Image 1 (cartoon, rainbow, N blue to C red):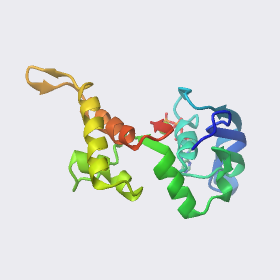
Image 2: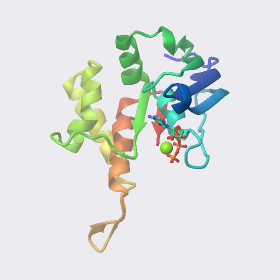
Image 3: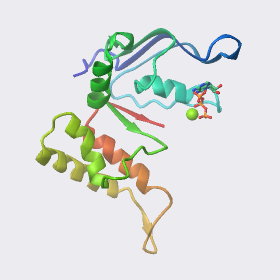
Length: 172
Ligand SMILES: Nc1ncnc2c1ncn2[C@@H]1O[C@H](COP(=O)(O)OP(=O)(O)OP(=O)(O)O)[C@@H](O)[C@H]1O
Ligand SMILES: [Mg+2]
């Protein structure tokens, strides 16, 4: 569990560069910041300013090319692939624009799956998934018998993350 005094996320001179030589693109240049538990942080900037690159680092989907990136005090460069997967599963919830839901599973099945990997028992998985679905459904609007706009899918994603009870929620 994260220590209340320790930042959830800490970036020290973090840079992200894609490619090499003349074709190299620097997406992040020596970024320094920390995020503590309970903080709500919005990353804003024009297209190409590095928002997705930064979110990928925060979600442990990518590594910096320079600098130190810590999650709950651990330098991500020190994490083995297994340890990294565990941190993602236990500590990070994702809400992606691209949804990333598995088409062969029901909505509840999608919500339950990360909990199964975490060893949560079936009964408890179903309880949490249903509670999160009820919560998400309160945010879905219906007019003339139809669901309005593209609200339900992000709501489903929120449910997915909420059921995981992770200390860090990354939304893109
Ligand atoms: N996989 C990649 N390979 C090469 N260059 C990349 C890659 N991903 C991003 N870039 C470049 O890095 C820079 C930052 O891109 P990034 O996608 O992080 O920006 P963004 O702020 O998320 O933009 P948008 O608002 O359009 O989503 C851009 O110049 C982009 O072209
Ligand atoms: Mg982006």
